[in-house]
Image 1 (cartoon, one colour):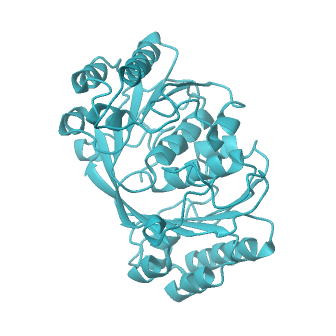
Image 2: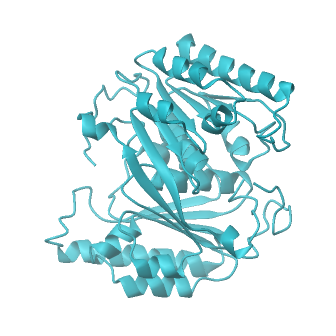
Length: 187
Length: 187
């Protein structure tokens, strides 16, 4: 990895060219990779907004840390219950629509250098939000804002408009061995 | 994802069964996924130790944040210069050996619930450390400690002894378009 940066070393300097990153695939590490990138960005004084799609009031470990840090704001939409993709409820669509609107507002506000849309890929795949609306958000991105989209089943349209796409591939998973999710690691 | 946890909800309760996670592959998100998992673990009151192999004094954004948080300690080994795998220097091997020894000591100390060995996979692939020593560390792991190993080129021996292995697969990368690494995101 080169140590050269494409912009000034001033910690509050925004990106001169913010990219669109997509983390997808069935393996672990999509949301945690976004979260790690958030911590790295905050460490450089950048301003971050995170929108959680389909995760209710995000009772996750990261909230306890992020809520104590400056320069990061979070918003959460959707219920804590599982969405049934074969039977999406109108209120679930409305929540996802609000999540996308919040992401758009943050992206265009000038107040954030990095905006994370957590689980938006799956929300689009399950038609909680219109795929074209997500594509439109990306194409409307101001040059100096970085976007990260996470979630399984990222549509090829999202891959096409993104700059950096990583697939988390499950090589071996403990759920295969019937170990259940553990607090502090899985959620 | 199930919300059931395999251990008590007490925030300082260690893992009843800590796993061995490996993040490998050429794509983005290995170190950031480990870092995100660290934040999640800290949010639940777990105690974390991070060993950086081959990254010198880690002048990375995350240090600015992690150094302000409780329950996390870091140690860094190796120089900031690139290791040439075709011409590994004795002092590079010595640094990597010290890194592995620090990880082992932390793992066995009883003071940590999660130990991250950042870039250890590549350190083993490049023979900075003996692969068998890394395998031995894993097999000596106390039951209630979680290990995360990151880095490209994880050996199949590591995949065999790990519980959870994720390959970060590069689908699309901006370096392909000659965009150089950017502070706050790439490092």
